[in-house]
Length: 244
Image 1 (cartoon, rainbow, N blue to C red):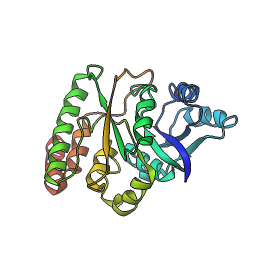
Image 2: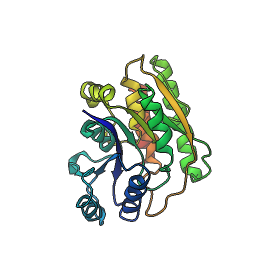
Image 3: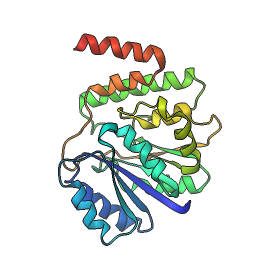
Image 4: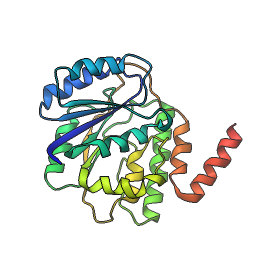
């Protein structure tokens, strides 16, 4: 395990953003490693990153198994692939600002096991996504509290960092229970993490997507329900049949 930090960037058709995102991270944090976890993009994402790799040995690109698609699956795979002491997961579309990496990394180097980004203002979300986020947060908090696990003010933010040696064993033991096709890997990590991990939070300003289209829709609630134990899975199954 190397010293330092790996920034995990899950991608699917992010050609409009990925080059600028890597450039911004590299300009601000030249020592960080960057790991692009691609879900078989159909646009130019791969070609853009491979050209960057020609001149930057600390950038890696992994094309994931086409039969294992999903944002959560990409994130947990990225954690396992990280070769550094710390990892930070963030979106590739600038809704998670590059400036937020500094506080997360500082908390990690000051003995935090997990650092969660908490959105200052969620007005950049569409109304539908705001409702989904609020409902998802409520469901996740209830599930974690019922299970005696630690929680967070913003489990749905998608911006978080952790200590690789803490979470790699968690994934190894419990990965089969994760909602791999879902969107909230942090929820699963909190569900199965040791009870005594040190969790810190840091505020950040949630931004607007710079290019491309969001991949998240109303199906996120069904995904989160499936993460909420047997009752949640049953409810998601019933609701999906009603909707269908």
